[in-house]
Length: 263
Image (cartoon, helix red, strand yellow):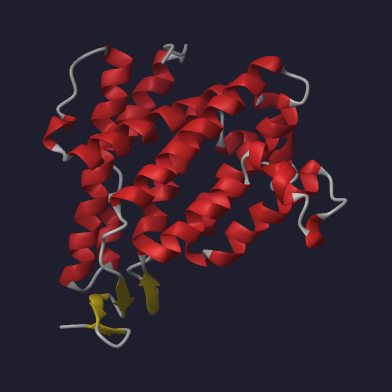
């Protein structure tokens, strides 16, 4: 991967933020040991991302070799994907701020640079992961992950021509088809809206810029490839994972008869 030019202040801010994601104050919301275990899992993932980003910026060896093979590959793909998104956003910054100000006037104060957007995305991603153990009841299974992966694939530019052949989308423009699936993702995962909303806004702006900016167009192609690889890897790695559900902060695994066993 070609090393991207990023101001040192943004590099340091991203690395420092990853070291403190998820923030300790989130622990106040957790009451069950299963929730605390889930929190530690999220912290471990972000600690691995912290070292991967630090390695990328400094060139120093990463200690992420302590992760298993699937974990190492996931973290490396996540890092590359976020950095690719940063590159597109940096080249689409004026458009991004303009679009954001339509949502709230102080958008440029909240996000003074692309690095700040990346930090918010990383924080929101951790929050979305935590939210699954805070809702009253939620089922998580490999089949649902597969559905999520298919929706992501639909959002990639090279899939759009196939999608436009469907009866409901026939005659729709590229932008209308993409917006259709953007909304589908947001409507399905309500507890993750904060995370998905900002990322989708960023991608929508970059798609628009890619129509006239060849550099962004090429990076968008790369981003789509990384996104596809990441979701395929996650799907493969979790294919044999046992389905589970959260119920009032307690985690239960699937049992015969389609039920879930809680301690």
